[in-house]
Length: 297
Ligand code: M6R
Image (cartoon, rainbow, N blue to C red; front, side, top):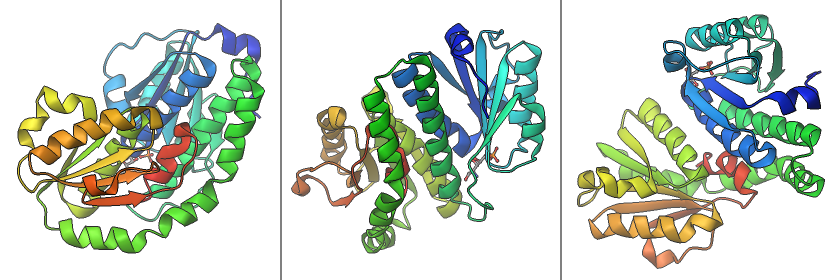
């Protein structure tokens, strides 16, 4: 139902993904996958920023808008602006018939059922899945990634529900950890690459649900200022799912341990257990899909 031709996709020189909050964090995963599989540059922007600047958009730009509700005013305004400037617009939403679907050239749906919980893990995970499916679809049309790799990624997507069930088996460990930290005033989240995206979303959820102040940092940025805030007893939660970045992230965690931080690591890698206070393991999957599993704990 998405009539985007090879000719059109080849003519695009930039994709914007525009959204707010959690949906924007899902967009960050979209950037990773689209750039990797399609080799088209992707910029992710916050709708409330995008709409008030003068973004460079023309008919060679595809603008993708992610909104669970399909009713977020800033996202809809950003969509209208993009259309005025000549871009094609594609909405990713959960709500059929929502305002955004009436404005967008094309709409695709997460079909995640009604949004009930503030944590909105379901909205986030289904948005990340859908934007990955979209990237695979674009890559198929463009022929930009070997089909064997795309088939493998599709299989990994089909295996996600079972793996989420598996991730949920850590619920007792998670409860125990929560009991230890629920009175903290500040919590830090660290990650590199795709794990930084998960850190951003995790930090948003901790703030919103627990009213605990938290910050997410790209682990390599820590030494450029925020390390000053890491003091004895502070809780630092790190996410490690990209095997190429394990050593780098571990060395950043060592820096916070040296300063007396208490550490939790959420990972799908085999890490030396004695280095960290708590490790919560999530099942392994393609790195591009790892935020879908890592966000569950
Ligand atoms: O309905 P939307 O996806 O457009 O909402 C955007 C944000 O308000 C939303 O993602 C929010 O950040 C989350 N519900 C926070 O948990």
